[in-house]
Image (cartoon, rainbow, N blue to C red; front, top):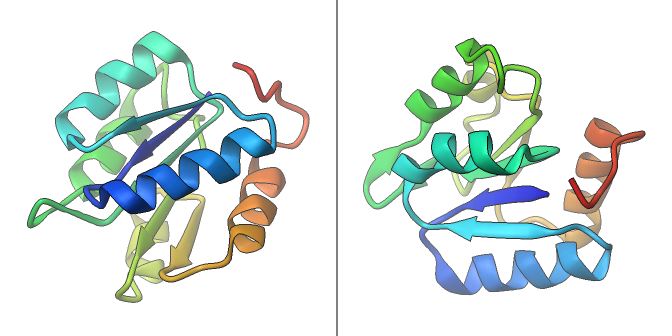
Length: 121
């Protein structure tokens, strides 16, 4: 299971299609406040989050995940059209993708972070 957080609905639709074509179960949310509860309930293999959602940033969600005993080892990939790569890594993200990115770049990043884990989880 991969959780995707982004407020761009078309982007989410495309990412969901790409991930599901590769065999990943995917849950999409547009609300940063749902990520932690979804992650606790769904036990994702990865979380993909946009840095800016509805004029707020998601750094607090990232930081809460990384101090949560259950979620701290779930890889997080942050995305943005602005290069926040260094800041995302400093705050605990395992990877950053600069938008727009190619589906192959996303899949390579995900595969590198979750190799050996079951896609269906």
